[in-house]
Image (tube, rainbow, N blue to C red; front, side, top):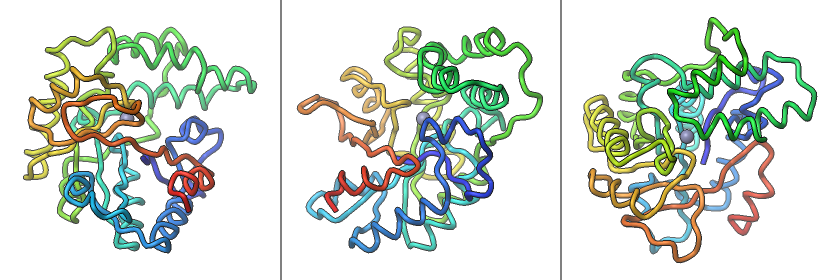
Length: 274
Ligand SMILES: [Zn+2]
Protein backbone atom coordinates (compact mmCIF):
# COMPACT_ATOMS: atom_id res chain seq x y z
CA UNK A 1 0.00 0.00 0.00
CA UNK A 2 1.48 3.23 -1.24
CA UNK A 3 0.06 6.75 -1.30
CA UNK A 4 2.11 9.71 -2.51
CA UNK A 5 5.46 9.55 -4.32
CA UNK A 6 7.83 12.46 -5.01
CA UNK A 7 11.50 12.75 -5.98
CA UNK A 8 13.51 13.30 -2.78
CA UNK A 9 14.54 16.80 -3.84
CA UNK A 10 10.87 17.86 -4.04
CA UNK A 11 9.97 16.64 -0.55
CA UNK A 12 9.86 19.84 1.50
CA UNK A 13 10.41 19.73 5.24
CA UNK A 14 8.63 19.62 7.59
CA UNK A 15 6.27 17.19 5.91
CA UNK A 16 3.26 15.70 7.68
CA UNK A 17 2.68 13.15 4.90
CA UNK A 18 6.17 11.69 5.37
CA UNK A 19 5.77 11.67 9.15
CA UNK A 20 2.48 9.81 8.88
CA UNK A 21 3.89 7.53 6.19
CA UNK A 22 1.77 8.50 3.19
CA UNK A 23 4.62 10.09 1.23
CA UNK A 24 7.71 8.20 0.11
CA UNK A 25 10.49 9.26 -2.22
CA UNK A 26 10.62 8.11 -5.81
CA UNK A 27 14.10 6.79 -5.04
CA UNK A 28 12.66 4.61 -2.29
CA UNK A 29 9.90 3.34 -4.59
CA UNK A 30 12.65 2.26 -6.99
CA UNK A 31 14.46 0.42 -4.19
CA UNK A 32 11.24 -1.47 -3.35
CA UNK A 33 10.51 -2.30 -6.99
CA UNK A 34 14.03 -3.53 -7.68
CA UNK A 35 13.96 -5.66 -4.51
CA UNK A 36 10.68 -7.30 -5.60
CA UNK A 37 12.05 -7.85 -9.09
CA UNK A 38 15.29 -9.33 -7.75
CA UNK A 39 13.29 -11.70 -5.53
CA UNK A 40 11.42 -12.93 -8.60
CA UNK A 41 8.02 -11.44 -7.87
CA UNK A 42 5.51 -11.05 -10.66
CA UNK A 43 3.40 -7.90 -10.51
CA UNK A 44 -0.37 -8.24 -10.87
CA UNK A 45 -3.35 -5.96 -10.37
CA UNK A 46 -5.74 -6.44 -7.45
CA UNK A 47 -8.37 -7.90 -9.78
CA UNK A 48 -5.87 -10.45 -11.07
CA UNK A 49 -5.01 -11.72 -7.58
CA UNK A 50 -7.99 -14.03 -7.32
CA UNK A 51 -7.25 -16.05 -10.45
CA UNK A 52 -3.54 -16.35 -9.65
CA UNK A 53 -3.78 -17.50 -6.05
CA UNK A 54 -1.91 -20.75 -6.89
CA UNK A 55 1.19 -18.80 -7.71
CA UNK A 56 3.02 -17.63 -4.59
CA UNK A 57 5.47 -15.21 -6.11
CA UNK A 58 3.02 -12.50 -7.03
CA UNK A 59 2.60 -9.04 -5.62
CA UNK A 60 -0.14 -6.45 -6.15
CA UNK A 61 0.95 -2.85 -5.61
CA UNK A 62 -1.72 -0.32 -4.72
CA UNK A 63 -1.65 3.48 -4.67
CA UNK A 64 -4.42 5.08 -2.61
CA UNK A 65 -6.13 8.47 -2.84
CA UNK A 66 -5.24 9.52 -6.41
CA UNK A 67 -2.64 12.29 -5.97
CA UNK A 68 -1.27 13.75 -9.21
CA UNK A 69 2.26 12.69 -8.18
CA UNK A 70 1.14 9.11 -8.88
CA UNK A 71 0.69 9.98 -12.52
CA UNK A 72 3.75 12.15 -12.80
CA UNK A 73 6.30 10.05 -10.90
CA UNK A 74 4.98 6.63 -9.86
CA UNK A 75 3.64 5.60 -13.26
CA UNK A 76 6.92 6.16 -15.18
CA UNK A 77 8.86 4.32 -12.46
CA UNK A 78 6.42 1.40 -12.54
CA UNK A 79 6.77 1.25 -16.32
CA UNK A 80 10.56 1.21 -15.99
CA UNK A 81 10.20 -1.99 -13.90
CA UNK A 82 7.49 -3.43 -16.12
CA UNK A 83 5.26 -3.43 -13.10
CA UNK A 84 1.53 -3.06 -13.06
CA UNK A 85 -0.41 -1.64 -10.09
CA UNK A 86 -3.90 -0.69 -8.97
CA UNK A 87 -4.76 2.94 -8.24
CA UNK A 88 -7.60 3.91 -5.90
CA UNK A 89 -8.48 7.58 -6.44
CA UNK A 90 -10.93 9.52 -4.27
CA UNK A 91 -13.35 10.84 -6.87
CA UNK A 92 -14.44 14.29 -5.65
CA UNK A 93 -11.01 15.95 -5.58
CA UNK A 94 -10.20 14.38 -9.00
CA UNK A 95 -13.50 15.46 -10.49
CA UNK A 96 -13.52 18.98 -9.02
CA UNK A 97 -9.79 19.73 -9.15
CA UNK A 98 -9.93 20.22 -5.37
CA UNK A 99 -8.22 18.65 -2.36
CA UNK A 100 -9.44 16.78 0.73
CA UNK A 101 -9.76 18.58 4.08
CA UNK A 102 -6.87 16.41 5.32
CA UNK A 103 -4.58 18.00 2.72
CA UNK A 104 -5.40 21.48 4.01
CA UNK A 105 -4.93 20.20 7.56
CA UNK A 106 -1.44 18.83 6.78
CA UNK A 107 -0.50 22.04 4.98
CA UNK A 108 -1.52 24.13 7.99
CA UNK A 109 0.37 21.83 10.36
CA UNK A 110 3.55 22.07 8.27
CA UNK A 111 3.30 25.85 8.07
CA UNK A 112 3.05 26.20 11.85
CA UNK A 113 6.07 26.25 14.12
CA UNK A 114 5.51 23.31 16.45
CA UNK A 115 7.55 21.56 19.08
CA UNK A 116 7.90 17.77 18.78
CA UNK A 117 5.08 17.05 21.21
CA UNK A 118 2.60 19.32 19.40
CA UNK A 119 3.73 17.99 16.05
CA UNK A 120 3.04 14.44 17.19
CA UNK A 121 -0.39 15.43 18.48
CA UNK A 122 -1.34 17.08 15.19
CA UNK A 123 -0.07 14.29 12.94
CA UNK A 124 -0.55 11.09 14.92
CA UNK A 125 -2.16 12.01 18.22
CA UNK A 126 -5.53 13.04 19.67
CA UNK A 127 -6.03 16.18 17.58
CA UNK A 128 -5.46 14.20 14.38
CA UNK A 129 -7.86 11.52 15.59
CA UNK A 130 -10.52 14.11 16.34
CA UNK A 131 -10.12 15.65 12.91
CA UNK A 132 -9.89 12.37 11.03
CA UNK A 133 -12.98 10.83 12.60
CA UNK A 134 -15.18 13.82 11.71
CA UNK A 135 -17.44 13.88 8.66
CA UNK A 136 -15.67 15.59 5.72
CA UNK A 137 -18.16 18.52 5.86
CA UNK A 138 -17.40 19.00 9.56
CA UNK A 139 -13.68 18.76 8.88
CA UNK A 140 -13.93 22.07 7.01
CA UNK A 141 -15.38 23.72 10.13
CA UNK A 142 -12.72 22.10 12.28
CA UNK A 143 -10.01 23.52 10.02
CA UNK A 144 -11.25 27.01 10.74
CA UNK A 145 -11.45 26.31 14.45
CA UNK A 146 -8.00 24.77 14.64
CA UNK A 147 -6.07 27.07 12.34
CA UNK A 148 -8.10 30.24 11.74
CA UNK A 149 -6.65 31.55 8.50
CA UNK A 150 -6.41 28.83 5.86
CA UNK A 151 -3.82 28.77 3.03
CA UNK A 152 -4.86 30.43 -0.23
CA UNK A 153 -3.10 27.91 -2.50
CA UNK A 154 -3.11 24.14 -2.10
CA UNK A 155 0.29 22.50 -2.34
CA UNK A 156 -1.06 19.15 -3.59
CA UNK A 157 -3.31 18.16 -6.45
CA UNK A 158 -5.19 15.07 -7.56
CA UNK A 159 -5.23 13.30 -10.90
CA UNK A 160 -7.59 14.76 -13.50
CA UNK A 161 -10.07 12.66 -15.47
CA UNK A 162 -7.65 12.78 -18.43
CA UNK A 163 -4.76 11.52 -16.31
CA UNK A 164 -6.89 8.70 -14.89
CA UNK A 165 -7.87 7.70 -18.41
CA UNK A 166 -4.23 7.73 -19.50
CA UNK A 167 -3.21 5.68 -16.50
CA UNK A 168 -5.89 3.16 -17.39
CA UNK A 169 -4.90 3.18 -21.07
CA UNK A 170 -1.36 2.35 -19.98
CA UNK A 171 -2.62 -0.91 -18.50
CA UNK A 172 -2.94 0.11 -14.84
CA UNK A 173 -6.07 -0.87 -12.95
CA UNK A 174 -8.29 1.89 -11.56
CA UNK A 175 -10.40 1.00 -8.55
CA UNK A 176 -12.61 3.16 -6.35
CA UNK A 177 -11.76 4.72 -3.00
CA UNK A 178 -15.18 6.44 -2.76
CA UNK A 179 -16.29 10.01 -3.42
CA UNK A 180 -15.11 11.90 -0.32
CA UNK A 181 -12.89 9.51 1.70
CA UNK A 182 -15.71 9.20 4.25
CA UNK A 183 -15.06 6.27 6.58
CA UNK A 184 -17.84 3.79 5.84
CA UNK A 185 -18.20 2.50 9.39
CA UNK A 186 -18.20 5.96 11.00
CA UNK A 187 -21.12 7.14 13.14
CA UNK A 188 -21.92 9.93 10.69
CA UNK A 189 -22.63 7.40 7.90
CA UNK A 190 -25.83 5.53 7.07
CA UNK A 191 -26.58 2.99 4.34
CA UNK A 192 -27.86 5.62 1.96
CA UNK A 193 -24.64 7.61 2.26
CA UNK A 194 -22.54 4.45 1.95
CA UNK A 195 -24.33 3.41 -1.23
CA UNK A 196 -23.88 6.90 -2.67
CA UNK A 197 -20.11 6.72 -1.97
CA UNK A 198 -19.87 3.29 -3.60
CA UNK A 199 -22.15 3.81 -6.60
CA UNK A 200 -21.35 7.38 -7.61
CA UNK A 201 -17.59 6.80 -7.53
CA UNK A 202 -17.91 3.59 -9.53
CA UNK A 203 -20.03 5.15 -12.25
CA UNK A 204 -17.92 8.32 -12.54
CA UNK A 205 -14.73 6.29 -12.84
CA UNK A 206 -16.28 3.91 -15.37
CA UNK A 207 -17.43 6.81 -17.51
CA UNK A 208 -13.99 8.41 -17.20
CA UNK A 209 -11.87 5.39 -18.15
CA UNK A 210 -14.39 3.54 -20.32
CA UNK A 211 -13.90 0.29 -18.39
CA UNK A 212 -15.59 -1.68 -15.66
CA UNK A 213 -14.37 -0.74 -12.15
CA UNK A 214 -14.06 -3.99 -10.21
CA UNK A 215 -11.98 -3.20 -7.13
CA UNK A 216 -12.93 -1.10 -4.11
CA UNK A 217 -10.66 0.13 -1.34
CA UNK A 218 -12.10 0.99 2.11
CA UNK A 219 -10.96 4.48 3.18
CA UNK A 220 -8.57 4.11 6.07
CA UNK A 221 -9.26 0.36 5.98
CA UNK A 222 -12.49 0.81 7.98
CA UNK A 223 -14.90 -2.02 7.21
CA UNK A 224 -17.30 -4.56 8.66
CA UNK A 225 -19.35 -7.44 7.25
CA UNK A 226 -22.37 -5.25 6.42
CA UNK A 227 -20.21 -2.75 4.54
CA UNK A 228 -18.64 -5.56 2.54
CA UNK A 229 -22.12 -6.79 1.62
CA UNK A 230 -22.94 -3.33 0.27
CA UNK A 231 -19.67 -3.21 -1.65
CA UNK A 232 -20.61 -6.51 -3.28
CA UNK A 233 -24.19 -5.42 -3.91
CA UNK A 234 -23.01 -2.36 -5.85
CA UNK A 235 -21.06 -4.67 -8.16
CA UNK A 236 -17.47 -4.63 -6.98
CA UNK A 237 -15.62 -7.93 -7.10
CA UNK A 238 -12.97 -7.39 -4.43
CA UNK A 239 -12.05 -5.05 -1.60
CA UNK A 240 -8.76 -3.77 -0.23
CA UNK A 241 -8.29 -3.36 3.49
CA UNK A 242 -5.32 -2.55 5.66
CA UNK A 243 -5.65 -5.41 8.12
CA UNK A 244 -8.25 -7.87 9.26
CA UNK A 245 -8.47 -10.33 12.09
CA UNK A 246 -8.01 -13.97 11.29
CA UNK A 247 -11.30 -15.67 10.37
CA UNK A 248 -13.07 -12.32 10.00
CA UNK A 249 -15.79 -12.82 7.39
CA UNK A 250 -16.38 -10.53 4.44
CA UNK A 251 -18.88 -10.84 1.60
CA UNK A 252 -16.27 -10.70 -1.17
CA UNK A 253 -12.56 -11.46 -1.74
CA UNK A 254 -10.59 -8.97 0.35
CA UNK A 255 -6.93 -8.22 0.80
CA UNK A 256 -4.85 -6.95 3.70
CA UNK A 257 -1.94 -4.78 2.70
CA UNK A 258 1.50 -3.80 3.91
CA UNK A 259 1.74 -0.03 4.49
CA UNK A 260 4.95 1.01 2.72
CA UNK A 261 6.18 4.01 4.71
CA UNK A 262 9.52 5.81 4.34
CA UNK A 263 12.43 3.64 5.50
CA UNK A 264 10.27 0.58 5.92
CA UNK A 265 12.53 -1.83 4.06
CA UNK A 266 13.23 -4.09 7.06
CA UNK A 267 9.50 -4.32 7.81
CA UNK A 268 8.82 -5.11 4.17
CA UNK A 269 11.49 -7.81 4.02
CA UNK A 270 10.11 -9.33 7.21
CA UNK A 271 6.55 -9.36 5.80
CA UNK A 272 7.74 -10.93 2.55
CA UNK A 273 10.03 -13.33 4.44
CA UNK A 274 13.10 -12.27 2.45
ZN1 LIG B 1 -7.15 6.75 1.55
